[in-house]
Image (cartoon, rainbow, N blue to C red; front, side, top):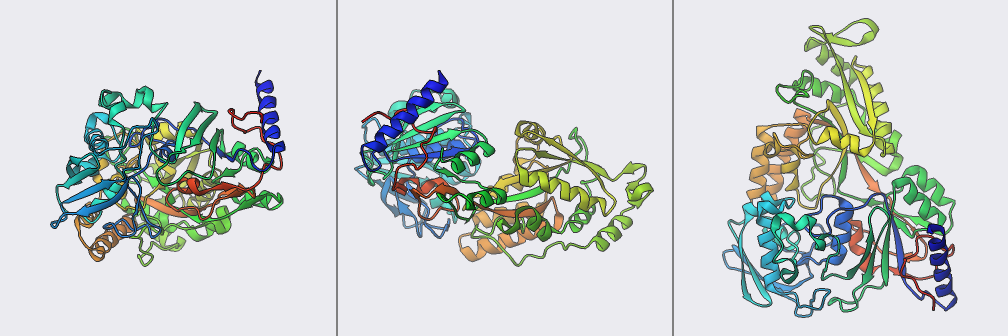
Amino acid sequence: MQAARRWWMATAVLGAMACGAVADKTAVIAIGADGDALIPLLWTQTQARTYTELMFDKLAEIGAGQNTLGDAGYQPRLASSWTWSKDSLSIAFHLDPRAHWHDGRAVTARDVRFAFQLYSDPKTGASGRRDFAMAVDSVSVGDSLTATVWFKRRTPEQFHSVAYSMIPLPEHLLGMVPHDSMRSSAFATHPVGNGPFKFGAWEKSRSLELVANEAYHRGRPKLNRVVFTIGNAQAAVRAVLAGDADFYERFTLEDMTEAARTPDVKVMTVPIYVYGVLEFNMRSLDGKAAHPLFGDAGVRRALTMAVDRPSLAKNVLDSLARPALGPFTRTQWTSDTTLRQIPFDTLAANTLLDSLGWKRGGGGMRAKAGRALAFSIVVSSSSRPLARYSELLQQSFARVGAKVTVDLGDQKALIDHVVPHTFDAALLTWTASPSPSGARELWGSVSLAKQGAQNAGNWSNQTWDTQVDSALAALSATEVRAHFRKAYQAAVDDAPAIWLYEPLLVPAMSTRLLTGPIPSDAWWQSIPSWDVISAPKRPAGGAPSSAKKP
C-alpha cells in the first residue's frame, strides 16, 4: 500500500510538471524530528515553534538588527501601529483591520487579551511565563482593533516581551477550553491561525503540510505549499542530496563536501543563537550534597584550563564554529568579546590540581583522600559533533590526570539524565534568543531545585543573579550592557561549564528554491518570501499528498 501511494504521488508530480512551468509551487523541507503542541506559547520543541510561527503572526516582528530594546526596528505584523503612553507604562496596539483568522473571523483586541490571560495563568504551563508575569499587569480592550497592554514597571524589553512573545490566539475557538487542557485540545493538533500559511495535514512523525493563506493581510506567500518531511538528521541530508527534499537547515562539514559534488544543491552559512557547552553538575547525583568534584570551583577551573577550545572547535567543526565565550552568543546584542577567559594552560591546570590535594598515582591518574578524579560525560549519539567532542575532552582531561568515561546514548537517554539532574557532566547545546533575558532561567538560581533542563547543573552565583536582575531592570542600553558584562564575567570565572563552541548554521537547498537571507534567530521566518523557480529535476518521493493530476 505504501509503495502504491509513493508511486501515485510521484506520478502526480510528473503530471503537474508536464502541464507547464511550476504548476504547484511546493517546497519540501526535511527536518530531523517532529513537534508537539501546535499552539504558540505551549510548544516545547523547536520543530513545533517552526510550524506555529508560520501559521500565527506576532503583533510585531523584530528587525534585522535583532535589537530587543524599545521598539526601534520592529516591523508591523498583526498590529499596524502602536502608541506609547507618556509614562511608558502602557502601549496601545492598533490591529490591522485586514487581519483575519483562517476560519474567516476578524482578529480583534479580545484575542490579544485572551492570549495574555492564557499566557499568564500558571495552569497553562506556558514557557517563559515567569518573566512575562513579572512585567505585564493586564490587557484592556478599547475597541475591536485596539488592545492596550499595561505594565507593572518600565523595563528595557517591555515592548519585546509583548510584541514578539505574546502571540494572539482566537478567543472564539479556545475561550471555552480549560487552560490546563490546552496542550491536549483538538486545537493543538488542528490549529486555526492568522498567518501566511494555513494548517493542512499532520501525520505525526512522518509529515506536516501547510498551505498558502490566500487572504493573508500582508500578501499571499509565493509558495503554494510547505511540506515538512520528518525523519532524522541522516535521512534529512540524504533527502536533499537525492532531490527528495528542497531544504534542510543543518548540514555538517562532511555533508557540505557531498553537496559540493551535487550540482543542483547549494549551501550557505548563517550565524545563530546556539552554543555548545560541557556543563558540570554542582550537586551529587542524589541532590543532597555538593558534587564531590564539581562542587569545587578550583576543580572546574583546572579542567577548563586543560581544554584547548579553539583547537577542539577547529578539529570538530573546522570553519563552521568559533570558540564560545560564555553563556551567550556573539549574535546577541549584549555579547562581550573582551571578557577575561580562563586560558588553555595544562601546566597551570596541573599546578592547581596539585594545590587542591589531587595527587597523581599509578597510571598518572589523580586521587584525593581515596577518591579518584574520575567522572562521566553524558552525550547524545545523535549529534556527531558532540560525540567527537566527548572523545577529545576525554583525551584532554587525561593529560591532567582525570579519568573520564563517556556515556553515549540516544536523545531520550540524555534527557533522562539532564531533566532530573542525574549526571556528572553533560555535553549540551543551548539555544539563546535575541533577548538576553532567557539566560536568567537557563543559568540562574531561580531554576534551582526544579526538574528540567533549565540550570541543569544546579549552579548558583550571587553576582550572576544580582547583575542579571539589574540588567533586566535597567532602562538604557549602556546600563544593560554594563550589568551583563559583570554577570558574564562571573560565569566565566566560576566555570559552571566549559564554553566550547558557537556553530554556524549550514542550510542546504535545491537550486530551484529561492530563499534570500536566512534570519539568525529563526531560519523559518523567511519562508513566506521563498519561491520555487523550476520543477524538480529529480521527482521526489516527498511530494505533497494533496498533489493532483492536471
